[in-house]
Image (cartoon, rainbow, N blue to C red; front, top):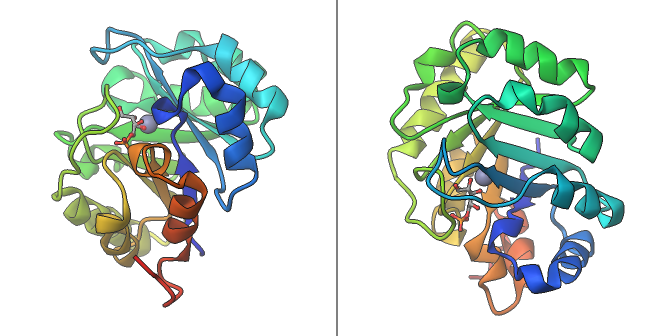
Length: 223
Ligand code: DX5
Ligand code: ZN
C-alpha cells in the first residue's frame, strides 16, 4: 500500500485555521490529524469536538482524530457526530479497550489504538484482530515539535512481524517528530500512515513538505 500522510493541525496557526485546512485540502496529504488533549491524560489542553465539527464543514479529506484524553468512552459518539472518520484512543487510558474499540466501530468510524513510547506492542496482542489501526507514539504525547524517539523503529518492526504472522491487515500510524529525516526508515519497516505536525506547518513551504513526504519511496526524493 502507498503510505498516507496526515498533517497535524496542532502545529498550524489557529488564527488562520481555515487557511490551514484549505492548504491540506489542496495538497497531496491524505488525512487531517486532529489532536485532542484534556490536560489530564497529557499535560496540555488543545481543542475538542466543537472545533472538529467546524473543520469537518470545510475539510475534503478524512479526519483522523487522536484522543489523548481520559475516559474517552464518554465522548466517542460526540466525536463521531462531529465528523471523525478514524477515532484513536490510548491503550493507557482505556481499562476496557476491547469494548471501546467496538464502541468506536458502532459509530461507523474506524478504530485506532495508540500506545505511548513506554508501552510495549505486546499489550495489543488480544485486540489486534479487532482494531483497524495501531498508532505508535514516537514522542511522549502532549506537545508538537518534540524529538523523535528512535526505538519506535524497532516497535514498528515488531508490530509488522506480529501482523504478518497472524495474517492481519491493519494500518500502522506513527506520530511525533516525524519528518524527512526519519520517514524513509519508518516506511521501510512497515509504517502506513505518517503524522507530521511541525515538519509540515513550520516548513517554509508546507505544501512542498507534504509532497516530499509523499514522494518517499518513489525514488525521486529531492531533499
Ligand atoms: C503529540 C501529538 C502529535 C503532534 C505531532 O502529542 O499527538 O500528533 O501534533 O507534532 P510533531 O510532528 O510536531 O511532533
Ligand atoms: Zn497525534
